[in-house]
Length: 130
Image (cartoon, rainbow, N blue to C red; front, side, top):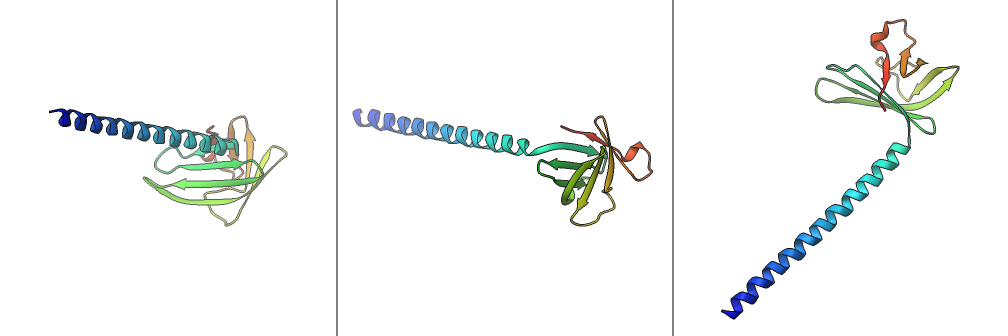
């Protein structure tokens, strides 16, 4: 009888140590992910979104003059374009590494909106996301 008691107690102790180590690992990974996200957010100057329907677009302006333009189809990411950006006289100028019809190179800044210089109506405009 005595052996069974000590054996059962040892197994419980091992489970407790395993749960403690697992909890500690999950906590450390969570802190690391939080700090990584914070650092990424600090690199973002502004983010604009458009096309809030079946196809969406997101323009992320990064500190230092780089940008990332992502466009989405009905249920997936259709592509990413990157390049450089510059604001001059309240106009955002984009210099993509490759040309794409979905992205205007000149856009007017208006409050929290970004209005493409393509002569179209406000349906093509972007709204500041963050």
